[in-house]
Length: 178
Ligand code: 3AM
Image (cartoon, rainbow, N blue to C red; front, side):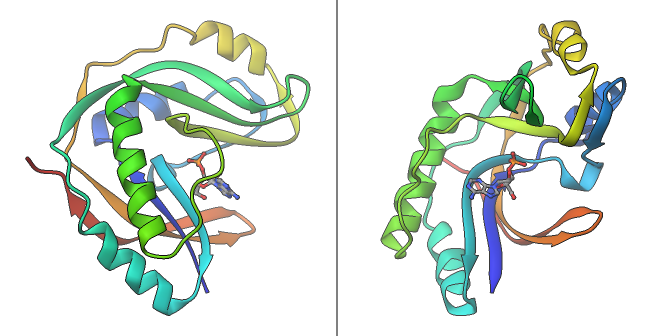
């Protein structure tokens, strides 16, 4: 079985800006450079045949390249029990559009539609029991922004879960073009 997701890989300048933020929270399992991505659609476990169908179907997604920028920070989970810290991305509409196209493509390839609302984000850290200093981090970086960066493509990734966190391998890359 293959655990798959579709994501955008931020450029190196953005990744290093994000890595520069990664300090000051007790219990944070910070993502490393290889792990930084902006998920378009989580797929989950599929068999090899379905993985091939999905990889082929995604080649049919058409959208011109567009620009986005970092925009603030946020958390998933409850206030007292966060499970992830992320950097936001704006504007949402071009990303939401691409998300919708990817979702429709996957449904046509036989997968179930995405169940939850799409919130574009780049996960920076995950948490177990402890998250000391998270509120101060969120306040300190509420105004996070960046120069716009071009999204020229997206990719299908395989996620392997291990003791030291997840390892993501690119399965196939897709260019956005007019
Ligand atoms: O983009 P991030 O890193 O926030 O949390 C998982 C990760 O998201 C998410 O998919 C990305 C690659 O693993 N993920 C894991 N299980 C999920 C699920 N059941 C999920 N997203 C939605 N539903």
